[in-house]
Structures are given as structure tokens and as C-alpha cells.
Length: 218
Image 1 (tube, rainbow, N blue to C red):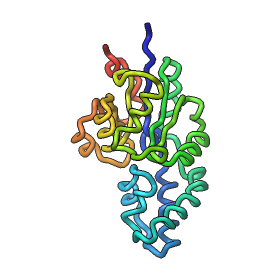
Image 2: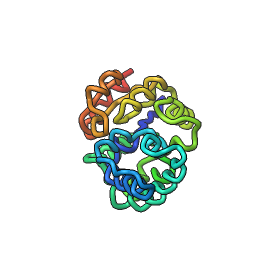
Image 3: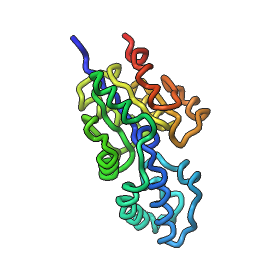
Image 4: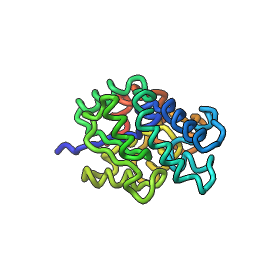
């Protein structure tokens, strides 16, 4: 009997380049609250733990809630202009779905912004399920988001693959007991990722299909 197999994708840095939108919303928030603008590289390195954790190191504790509100108000619009699919994403996910894999998204980004992106970028139809950290008690690198997706599909861990771009993705996959592939299109350098010992590291998402038989072997 054929076992259903699921490929779970992180969103930012794995499928989508939203760094221009993040940078614009971040620096809009800083200006509104009287803080200095930050270089895009510093902002990029802070991405991945959700918007609240993105802002937290840069503002006073008393300003954090207002900062989050300002950021989110701006970000709804910024995402429509400052996000794009990474090269090869649309072709890769379409191919994998055609091959019979069920596709899911696991993101630390809030649900409403993840939904805006996948709808705006035309990839919503390829995904059976999306789960974001704002509906859970903890986000990645805690493994809960991946384990919940496994439960949703009613599959075993060996029948899932997780694809991300950061050290926290490698950590979450390892803690969940799910084979993890890291693509180096995100904000973390490859040498930092290698220290987390993911199952596989690739340079671009279009390389993923050729490695699928190895990942799911046996």
C-alpha cells in the first residue's frame, strides 16, 4: 500500500524573498518611534523568530507593543510590493505536487501575513495545509509546529521531509525527528548551518527533486 508522503516548507528565505518588505516595515517602525534606521543586513540576520522577536532587541520594553502594531499595519501593504518567489520555487512545488507529495508550510511568521504572501504570489493552490507559530505556544526551533503538521496528516515522521533555510529550521527538524534539508537562500551562512548537521544542504530549491529518492529511501 502506498504511504502518503508530506514535504513541509518554511516560508521566508526558503520559498519567498520578503526581505525588502521586512526591511521597509522595520525601518518605518523605527522612524515612527524615534529610533535609528538599521542596515538591511542587520535586519536580515534578525529575521526568522517572528515579528515580535525581530523588533524586541531594537526597542525599549515599553515601546514593544506599539512597535508590533506599527510594524504589522505597515507590513500588510509592504508585502504586496516587497515580496517575491525565490528562483525555481513555483516549478519545484508544482512538480512535487504532480508527483503525489502533499505539501505544507510551517512558518514563524504570523498566519495573516503568511496567507497574504502565498495568495499574492500565486502558490496557495499547491499547499494542503499551513501552520504558523502564532497559533501555537512556541515557534521554531521548538519542534511543535512540525509535530502538529505530522499529526494533521496522520503520517509517521519517516514519511515527512522538512525544508528550511536557517539554523532554527535544522534544529526544529532534528528535535522533531524529521529529515531536514536546508537551502542556503536565507539569512544564515552555510558554515553556521553545517554546525547543526541537517540531513542535506542544497544551494537552491530547484535541486530538491533530484534528492527526494535518497531522502525517502526505504
